[in-house]
Image 1: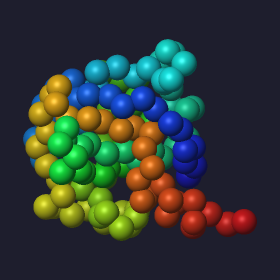
Image 2: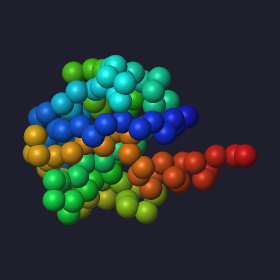
Image 3: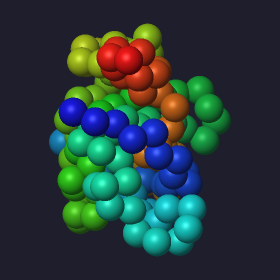
Image 4: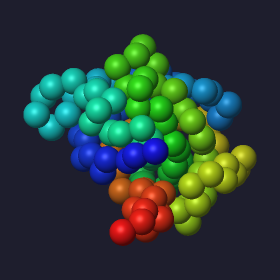
Length: 122
């Protein structure tokens, strides 16, 4: 497994999702250079989060980088703990999100990204 800590411009959710959704759509998949992102920009694992515009709600997720250019991006895990735990989903952390008002951070500095880096051998 590999994770590349890629910085990506903030996106908006392009279609509302429920707490049990298995995929999501973003407003676009353009990077800072204006080019479409590809799976090679992220490695084999990627983490991201949804957050509301008020900054009072957030959901951390792992997503499948091979689906970044698909019609929908697939979740691997949803509702991850806020502590950096790489695999534990918390049902209460899985939320419904509204299109247009939900920010999507695909290349964000989640605690999972830091934990992944800490776990790598030197």
